[in-house]
Image (cartoon, rainbow, N blue to C red; front, side, top):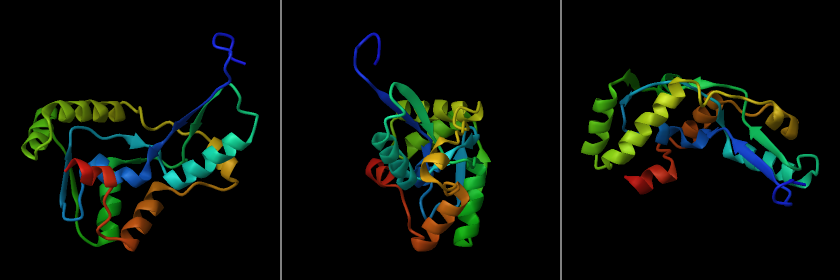
Length: 173
């Protein structure tokens, strides 16, 4: 039991959703160039596998009063994601690092608030520092199998639907 509140807890931290790769690249199916202010490795993790792992955590009593990290084991940087998209779709999607100012200006010209663009620029700075690369073996242990890697997940998603977009990305456009 938690000494301060008297309430039991289990905190689950999750890897970055692989499903959201288009959002992180500001990529749409017609996009041929991705321009971001930084790059860094990310522990992309499937939402379906996170849901399965979370359900198993909730069904077990052994994680009481713990903070857990659920991630796949493969890391892939944003440049690598652009390369996977290129390969899966058979068309070149180039990747370029631009200044923070260029990035903010480009998003603002696309109708996004400058404040939001600035926040995302800071997110990419964190990725470049390695803030998205931490992996943990717990999800694999819970699933009893190796979680699907980002490259395989993205390839399958685009083969199944070449017009794949992340739902929140569409809502913000």
